[in-house]
Length: 141
Image (cartoon, rainbow, N blue to C red; front, side):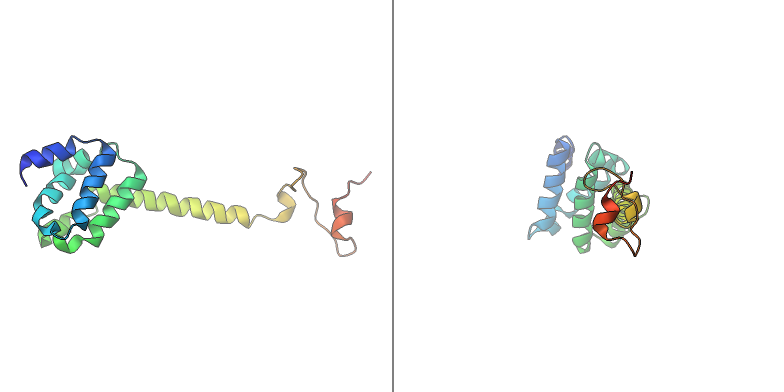
């Protein structure tokens, strides 16, 4: 593959660039595309490929690169796995964002019942041992 192919791929829309890379990584003869794949991923320090791709696409693409990392030379592998590689940075940021969202959701589930609104939208007061749950939900006058 030549530089014209690399330029052609980088000129594609973000979603099409991602699809092209993932398709080439999955091919049986992916080794024949190794240098073009590498050039597409790292051109302009990775900014050319990563421009305008969504976080989810960056995660999927970087996961595909890692799954096929043995296709690349040792030097290419080091570059693709370096902390400075832009696609890896985006991947890490998305992973952190996902973990934070999971932690937030988990914390919301563990919120005490007295602070959570009831299905009717009213705050429930805690029940005592003497009261039944039905009695606790009745408004007191």
